[in-house]
Length: 397
Ligand SMILES: Cc1ncc(COP(=O)(O)O)c(C=O)c1O
Image (cartoon, rainbow, N blue to C red; front, top):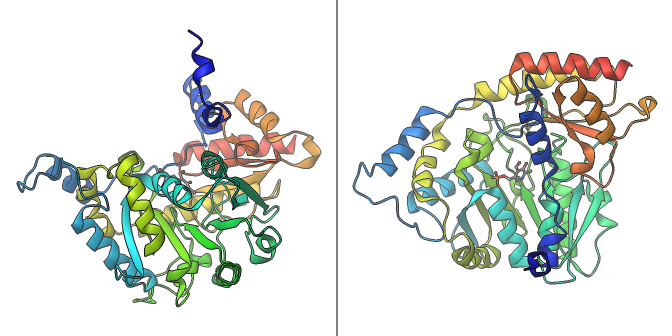
């Protein structure tokens, strides 16, 4: 039987993630220095784990191992609403705005694309992008329009405006960004929001790294408590709730990427469509883990974020001397330029670094160009310093 003849073109044109290839190659290399992994390296807080275990063991007799409502565990939704009110000042009133717990941030992004995009529609994404972004449009028969943000990786209104056409449905912004860690300013976020409003286009804000902001890139603070630093966001602008879809995750923030939990808040008309679609796609996010995540908003991540900022500084000190690196203002990535005098692509640099057992991700995995590589500093500190020295050595030639 010719099974290949049965595969849809929707699926067959999709390449496996380039990050997965690096994973496999590193796994086959004894002593590999892994600077490619996009997940936190700190332990999960005990309160979160205990809450999930108690849910699985049915400690309170609530049957938290069954389905939840499609929109999510009622207590978790209440915690999300409370957090969003405190953080960005939005009141989720169920009339104009709504909230939905999703199966990962990826799940939320996929449902948003499904809810918004018709075949032929256009969807503006940053270049460099997170690996899923171009496929979101493709899977809906729509077109991803890449906004070139080189060399500073800032997706500004000026850069986006030139790309908006009558077919544009949404602009997807990611700050702090993957793969660059670059954080937009509040002014840049405001300008993007105003542009989207003016053009009647939805602004989708992927804020999966929202809690990982480094001191110098923060705005004044949260809506309800200006003393607590916060990453700039279009959602912090007054009245933003009717034009912005905010997508966030629990996985990166609390080190539970395998739990597959995210949430979305935004205009009810859109969130309602996403909820309808979730019924038939994921049904609901993993139930006992939703119960575990209720404890998450109370966990203080300050020390972990300070540690990532310290490592970011080590990256900038070591590589900033030998090449161009746009300053990561958050997350745990840097998108590093391969020095032009080496006359190497990102892929060639990857192959060269691999000879010295250092594993990074070539830029072409995230971009239409192949001039950079992504380095993750969510790595063991001794691996990070050894790996950085090796990379800097290769760059010095
Ligand atoms: C920018 C960005 N958005 C979304 C995701 C997907 O996250 P999740 O594991 O919650 O699906 C990632 C994961 O790396 C990411 O970097």
